[in-house]
Image (cartoon, rainbow, N blue to C red; front, side, top):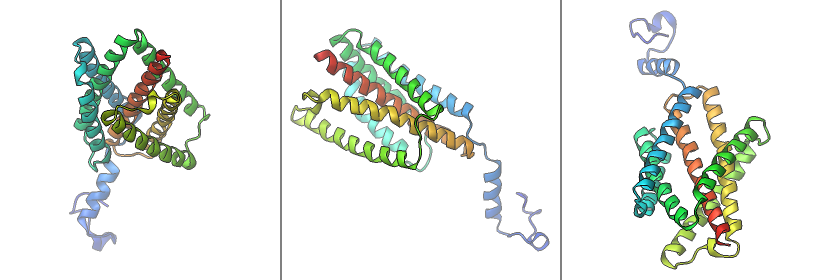
Amino acid sequence: MSHNPVMNQSLRTGLSSNQSYVDQEFGRITQTRMTMEGTTSKVIGMFLAVVIGAAATWFFGLYQFAFPAMFVGLGLGLWAAFSKKVRPGVMLAYALVQGVFIGGISGIFEAMYPGIVQTAVLGTFTTAGAMFAAYRFGWVKVDARFTRIMTFALMGYFAFALINLGFAMFAGMSAYSSPFGWLIAMVGVGLAAFTLNLDFETIRIGISEGWPEDMEWRAAFGLTASLIWLYVEILRLLAIFNQD
């Protein structure tokens, strides 16, 4: 089978004369594949976008943009996640806007509880490192059962988060202010941490199965979103403990 229509002579070879099929197969064979190096570079790029947004918000004291950025980031995240087309620009914009969000809330919490941000950052990277070690050495098995359980758990937690956000905005009530707020926050930290294992598995499968190169962006987006979520949950948990 040749990409050249002149060479694709079905009468001589017995192959289909449908040139579009030939083009599709040629593209599938020759397209650039997903690699660890490419995925890593895109993760670093998105992480830098988060850091730039957070640093600018922190150093210039633009804390008032934190919550508008949260909603904008949510919209961009949903667009990037559910779009059939891979959109690197949207993903980078998501990382930048989420950086503004975490930079804003970090500044607010740091003013209330000095030193909390440093602890949250250290806790985020320590937890992420522990999850990677657990995945790498097979202590956490990311199989169909694990994926199914995590999927239902995440759906339930996000539904709770949206309902809680609604009560907090319109009724001034939050489940995190209850005596069991610390327990709910710990559940959030746990879910965010174990979600990293799903991201690691996605990257491993994508590389081993030779997914198209643009899937590197989807993998980097998923890992970045999980790390941001983990940081926010750890920051919230530390704030609850500091209140006590």
